[in-house]
Image 1: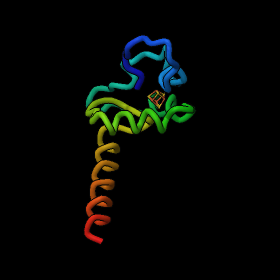
Image 2: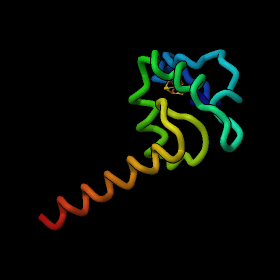
Image 3: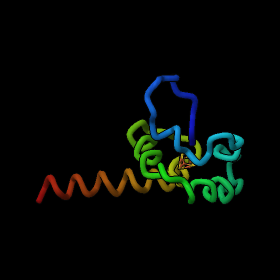
Length: 90
Ligand code: SF4
């Protein structure tokens, strides 16, 4: 989800976000509410990967980022942690 960032002269991935101008509430649905619409916006987003990695790197706990919910991002973090541990012990 595109969140308020500092205004700089540099172009960032946020400038290409598909959710620019879209109601932010869509990306922070109430518990149990549908995430389908937000994910639909993300589906056509050219910076989806950047958005997801940003959320993972910053430990974003809430909202849809890179087309993924909190739970889906947690799963990715867990899988990556397991892969790191497996690589370290290999
Ligand atoms: S992936 Fe989704 S939340 Fe992230 S910038 Fe694109 S449209 Fe916005």
